[in-house]
Image (cartoon, rainbow, N blue to C red; front, side, top):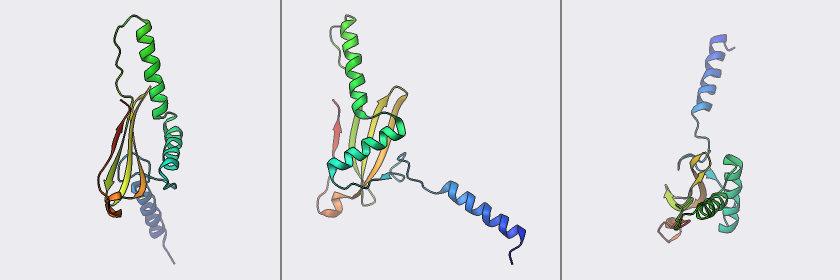
Length: 135
């Protein structure tokens, strides 16, 4: 039979282990959110859904807000307005997994998020990373 001390020690170890476990939250490459979709178009839709769920914002909304700000500045009398890119996307290879990396500007600042899209192209016979920007 287990003693009270053994039970308390076991519960404490389980509680601490749960706190330090790598929960996929998208904050780093190691904690990239695993996607269910492998089709590129459906994967992008799933990524947008995750961004909306986590930040209530997406790169599409960032682009809309940047265009609205440019229009406001032109109406205010500025002759030339070139807004900064409100988002960027890149594909990274991380330990054999293809990681989809997004950053975008929200009203609350810059947000970075990582998604695990499956096996890397490098391991399928192709290599190289891609980078897409809003500008």
